[in-house]
Length: 233
Length: 277
Image (cartoon, rainbow over all chains, first blue to last red; front, side, top):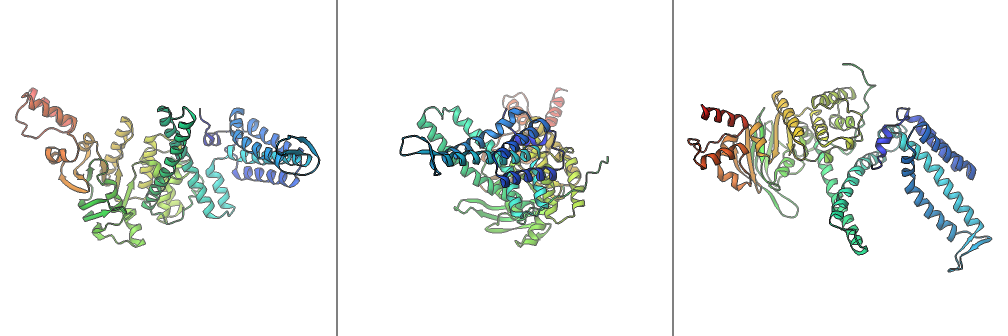
C-alpha cells in the first residue's frame, strides 16, 4: 500500500483535537529546541514527538518510519558534508584523500545540526500527520498569514496528488515497455518522463484556470466559513 | 435562451477550431452536441461562457448579447455552468464542501446562504455526508457528482456538461443520466457533449452534429440518426438497436421500416412486439 499522508491525517486519534493546540504545541516546541540549541534537548524533543505520534495519536510505527525516511536521507547527506568539508580545529580523523579531514568542530557541528533538524522535523511531522491540511490552512488564515501563501499552498496541495498520480501512471506505462532495464534506457526514460510531466503540468494549469474562471474566479479564492454544523434533518 | 451566431474561433497557432457555428438552445431542453474528438466541442463551450472570445460572431444569453466586461461575464457564467470533462481539472479545494462553496462565494453570497446552497447541492447529487472528505479520495463517479454540485450551487439556468459519462462505469453513467433527467424535469436546461450515441437517443430532445468546427446537422434524434450521410461524415454510428433493425431489414427479415429505425430499447421493444403479433 502506498503511503497516504492525507488518510492518516484524517484518521488518527488526534485528528479531532483543536488544530490551534496542535499548531501551538508544534511551533512552541520547535522554537524551544531551536533556541536552546542543546543536543540532549533535541533528542528529548524527537523522542517526545515520536511518542505523541505513535502512542498518543496511534499512528502505526511503520507509517511514521516511512514518513521520516526521506528527510532522514537528506539531512544525513547534509550533515556528512558538514562533517567532512567544514570546520577547523583538532584533526581527529584523516582520510588521506585530497586532504579531507574530520575535525572535532566539524564533527560537533554535523551531529548538532542533524539532531536539530530532526527535532524540528518531528514537530512538523506531528502537525502534518495529525491535522488535515484544510484545518492547518484555516489556522494560518486566522493567524493573518498573507493570503497569497495560503492560496498557493491550497492549490499545490491538491495538485500534488494529481501530479503523483500522473507520475505513477506514466512510470507504469514506461515500465510496461521495459523502459528501466539498463542504465542508458533508464536515463532516457526518466528524461522523457520529466519532460512530459512538465508539459502536462502546464496543460493542467491552463485547464484549471479555465475551470476556475467558469465559476467566476476573480483572482482571490474566497474563504468558506460555515457556521457550526447544525445537526438537523 | 442561449444563442450563438456565426461563431468563428481560431487558436493562437492559426488552427481554425470553429468555422461559423450557429447554435440555439431553448428553455427546458436537453440538447446533445455530438462529434468526434477534436471537432471543437469543448472550444465551443468555452466560447459560450466567455472564457474564449470568438474572432467573429456573437453569443446571446437570454437575448442579451454577451459583452466581455467583468460584470457581464460574471452574469453570464452564473447563468451558464460548465462541468468539465475531467473533474480533476475542476475540483481544487482540499475538501468537498469548500470546492462546492467556491462558486457561490465568488458570486458574493453570504456564508449562510452559501452553506445552504452547498448542502442543497450535495444532497441533490447524492453526496451528502461527504462534506469534509478530500476530493482525491473519491471515486471517479463521486468526483463527477461533486463537480456537478459545484455548478448546481451557483443555480445556473443552463448546465453544460463536457462528456459527462466518459470514464465512468455503467452504474455511474446511469446515475449521472438519471440525475440530469431529474434536473431537467425541475426546469434546468441542459447541454451535453458526447459521442455515446446509445445514450443520446435516450435523453436528448435535440441533437447537433459538429464536424471540424462546423455544424453539419441538427434536429431530433430521429431526424439525425436516419440520415446516414450525416452519421458517416461525423464518424458516428447508429445506436445498437438501430443497427440491429438495419441488419434485419438488409437481410429481408423485416420490411416497411422506410429508413425509420427504432433508436432506443423502448422503441425497439415496441416494434418487435408489433411484428410478433
